[in-house]
Length: 195
Image 1 (spheres, one colour):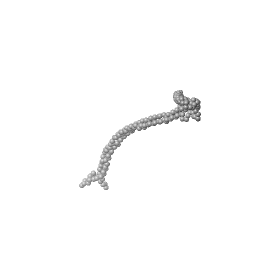
Image 2 (cartoon, helix red, strand yellow):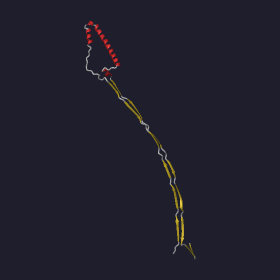
Image 3 (tube, helix red, strand yellow):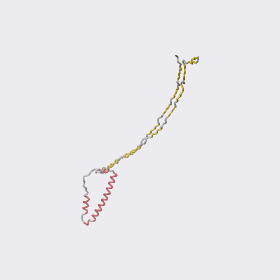
Image 4 (spheres, one colour):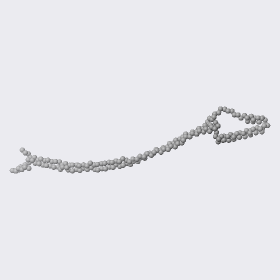
């Protein structure tokens, strides 16, 4: 026995999506940087040390006297001897004027003038402290100034390039429905027909 059949055959619609991806490019140049370091300012002031040795007195003690100094010393000695001689002669003249008071002024003056020896004791040549030493120390003054570095920087902006993406939607296949009939008959009154 054959049963009537209806056959349905369908296909679904298919969509198609085509995409173009977005494109982003970023370029970043490095910053421009300059650094300058000035030298430090340095100044040095130096006062040299000074040593003075005066041995004039020591040289005089051993008889080494300059002509100018010897002349000066002789002039002073002559002046003091002259004044001492004038004083002695005034005193002796006064003693002679008073001879009537007694005594023997001539003999005492002769004895006093002959007894001119001086006692000698131990002496040092040159005498102690005759060499004079003077010293002034030197000085060093150092002044400096540190200069800060000069830094200049310039930032470069990034370069950005952007291309947007796209999405294209289209229908790839249309939907379809196919209907088939099998063993389908129309039976009417005294009538039969295959459909």
